[in-house]
Length: 91
Image 1: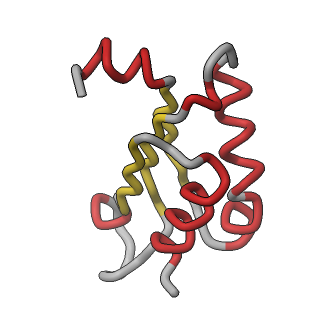
Image 2: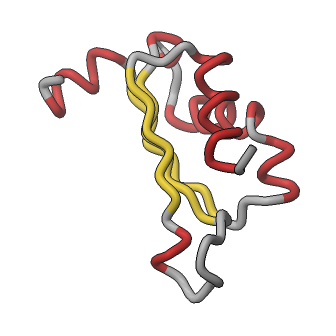
């Protein structure tokens, strides 16, 4: 299983998100083709309701602690509640 799929599976099973995007942004940097070291995660879940941004990021980082320690060089997090997501993007 590749790193991107592993990230997706972990976040899906832990947060049961309404919306999830895991985007491999490694190609935008000076790395070999096919690298999986830089990701952007967009996650929308009711579990973030009432949580400060730092706590949302800590929750995601805790779920991905092994990947962050061993595989991921950079991780950009965009964390939303359902209400925030609908207000910003109307989806």
